[in-house]
Image: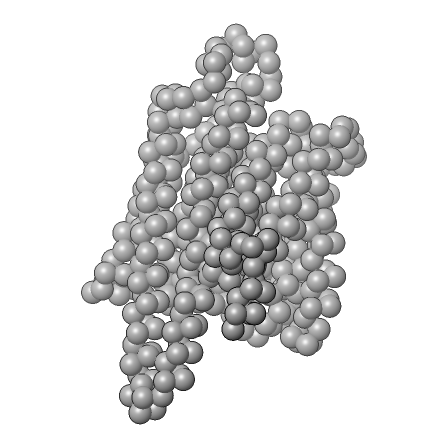
Length: 388
């Protein structure tokens, strides 16, 4: 037993500490993606070219692992599965990433990250509507999930409808002359952009992401190979973006890299955000459970705010701050509700197992162990991977 515990130590660090360090690193990696994506848009990289290159890199990383690690788990590919993967890509890659870039282009990295905190609540609402998730208003956990969902909706509405005055911005960021003289600062400050439309796009991004999570459930039950499902989804996402680009991005020069900075932004998006971060997130979900991973999401928003302020000179508005606070509060209500529901279900399962087996201690211990390892945010099939 001691050997097993020691085997999970890295440089003398216990596994619990490893999980927290990994989650902090993950939030910094995803926070960097928000900032890097905005830099890419500011440099003029096409909103269609960027996701194509990003997903090609991600596909190159995923395919070898999916092929070798899931040989035994991967069912035979049929036309029915191909159609399902196509629609998963349409929702989880094309609409998800397309809406994200359109929203980011009109708002800012901080508020894009803030709105993403509503994804668990939106996912719960969708799952409840499809009767995948049960809503019990006669229990505290059910009320908490509903209140959390409403708080997230209220927060997203505030961000969308009320921009408010600037409450913080770097020196000179509010100077109109400075913005006119430096187009880069003007782009970051949102000059010439439609804030409300950008927030609507980001809400579309969250709806697409949540829909992708919910729709994966029935697919993974029939095709229980997560890496392969993600690879096929990514492949069809590339195809869909290429078809869209064939109609709306006919400038051949848009596909050419013009600087090392452009190459860096695409490599970061592909390798770090869709590769390394994906692997780290899978490990953290496996060891700590989806709720543990989701609890760290607001840290990403804080890190993005600091990064964007330093590197992009981003300004912060009252409406955005109020909305972000509501969304993060709603997130924790939903997570607390899910945690309470899991604890209640585990307790009931233990009692049922004890009654049916006449005090079978082995079943009780295994149930307790399972509940301590994972606390699903949604049904197990919905623990997904990609962030954006």
